[in-house]
Image 1 (tube, rainbow over the protein chains, first blue to last red):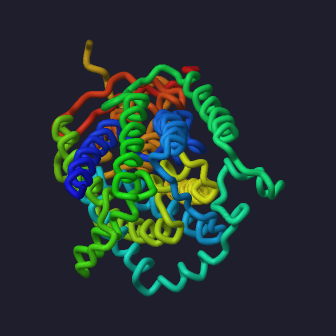
Image 2 (cartoon, rainbow over the protein chains, first blue to last red):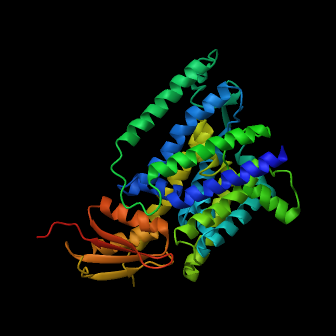
Image 3 (cartoon, rainbow over the protein chains, first blue to last red):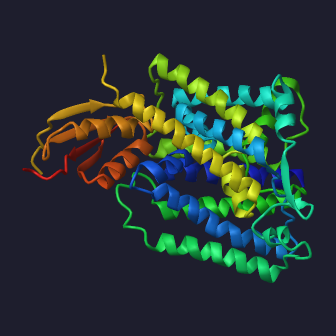
Length: 342
Length: 83
């Protein structure tokens, strides 16, 4: 069983890393572009991943293969964590997955941001900021004693309501139909240096479905995530605690060589060093990302892809806060850049 | 194709988004309509994002070429109306 977990994790990670790299699947750029640009191809990749995963996970749940665990709707921790995470992403120059695959192709700024991300995460999960997280996470909203999602939302108004699979398929159908309607209106894909938005969306989407299936084999009730395995691997490396090592850890270990090989094949593998000032900024951004993602209980992958695919309101809330943080810091950076140079 | 006359060269090596987009947008907006900007970036994502974004802003992307290992050159003409 362990062998299946290791092999499927490493292979899925390799394919995932390859796809993220070739598709330039940077969710930081996606979030920014929603408000600041007229071009939305990475948003389309993300929405396509969701349109594949929302029905796929529901089907796996109905078939009794997976029993998805939803993130709690932690009102304050999700808001503050998401905002801080979003602010940090802009300074770090990428989301968590983006930072991993950029570090894997020799971008020193991302490698520094990643170091900050690990350090910031350790401070929140087992360090000086642990009490802050425990305190902020107390404010939690649930519906009829369960984690809030779009599926059980009616129970907030009618306590006797139970969401059967018929109702869930109706909700999922509406959401997926809205996404597909938006995707069908996409302009022709242009200036794609690597994969087009839909190639990237399909491959990342299928890897995310595979994550659910293989995780279920070892009774892990979640799909793709990056924050949890980052902390688990850091705990193992720095204090020899192997408790959190699971399928997601093998996935993360496979992602790095996958991203490196993709970059090498595209002639995009070389050591790149930004200015010293930018490196310090990347480090600060990475630390903020580590604080924020661990406070919010997930990142752009764990919440933004896996949790949102469960239509979990906790994940939607944290993702919305993250997007807000990205917009806020982008606006600050724009203003600073527009100021006339002395 | 004849070699395009470049009015302004911008080297954004070491920068990632959002800086690649902000700096290239500021540079193209500072030019008169019809003038041509060349931007060099050192990562594949910026090589895809910068032309897509500038094109979305109404400018005309003339070419995107691989300019060496991990380097791309994007040539854009300011798409404002020529008076």
